[in-house]
Image 1 (cartoon, one colour):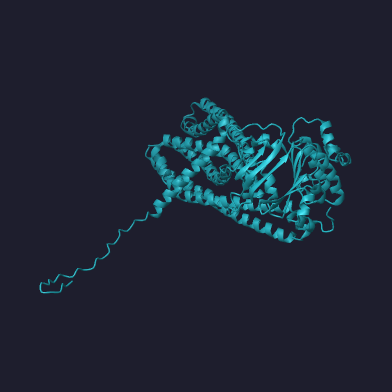
Image 2 (image 1 turned 120 degrees about the vertical axis):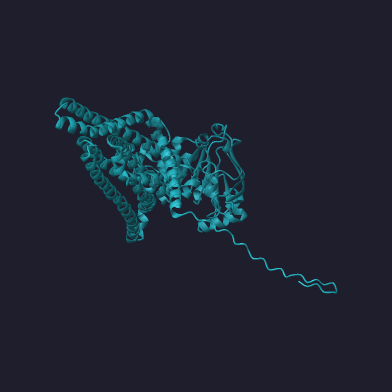
Length: 622
């Protein structure tokens, strides 16, 4: 730099600063990364195993006895290997202690057999009971969830969890009960015999064992990944089965048998490839263990022959050592095979626990009150609702109305207006996000779920019946109902006459979802069920929209008997039901657009009038 003027001083130029190179970060070696990953996997597996074993706590007494028996089995096996030494050194060479050695051997075999039976049966019993408890807990958990949970999980995936995933754990428990603990302790006992006979020979023969852990760890990780993929493929197959069988009529009607068969074949092929990969990985372990065992035997032969020649080892001790080494082969081979089953069980357990850790159920608040039978009214006050997993758009906004005791209130509107959502909020299938719903002035969220739902009867277009008898379906949810009440409810629903024509009358099995009955018969069974429950509040969700004229006439007569004296909310499209209502609420875009009787709304000429004319263009307005 240069300064101008008489007193200018020339300053040396400052060289530009060069960036200081950052120190290179040392990346961990593949060996260290592998060790770290293995440690993390071991910790995760340990957590999952502990969680699975938590279900055995109620059966700790049986488990303790089984462990004692397993220890006796392992000890007897190890002592039998040890007894080879006196057989050679005392009995065969010196011909002494023959009776004593024979008695000991016979006693050890008896002990081993008794302990084997006890350990296998007791551990299997504990395991099977624990797995049954797990399946029951999973099923109970699923039933306790909200409708939002069911909308986030397909029926096929939940069926796969309760059946296939639990079955994987059950088979693993059976194998672990028979092999893991018993064979593991057997290996420990035989290793003890090896070191008791000659610790230097044991170290020399087994020095290759630690190196087998490296491929074993890698294979274990591959097995875990393949097992998780296999379970996902099973889920895909279960979903296809559930969809095609439940939609059997549609598949037939559209001639899609070939398409659905191809879809199933592709899913089965994907499962086949994954299972073959698991088989190949599992099949590699036994030859690996055989090779290690053969190498250990060769090492033992060279070293043992040298020791015997130099008088440092007796033939009986050496044969006892070889016997223990040979006996280790079978339990180690079984343990390597158990590992594959264990990885499948851990993968299944991880999927099951992911469901058990999902909590979307609607629960009673602390101090929830028991709601008495409704006497006065149901009130919706500024109710708003939006789905938590949606885009935040409100389905309902500022909906307010009252339904007095004994009043019939019809809810109509265009498709997607929020009619079904509105009535689903009353029994708390979902909870409101704004406003309140009250029964006799009590917020339903402050009452117990049981007492709220005891107030409500539900009859829907999609009638849900169970593969049970007519009697059981009518009395569903009620205990100790006498025959006279069931028959009275059936008569009121105009179902008694057709029930008498069934092969076994009230004891006739009606098939899955009532498939052996017609649509009108199914609906009248559902109405009889609601009549028998005798709820003060009734929800009818398009209960007659899927019926022919004759069936609708009978169902309408049954509904007339059902709604007498009850507060009824009706989602209706049929003329007769709409005209019979005391009041009609018209929903539009999630809001109440109009309220009034049929005649009043027709005179207004608004949305209801237009909907009525569209649905019933030939029906004259009164």
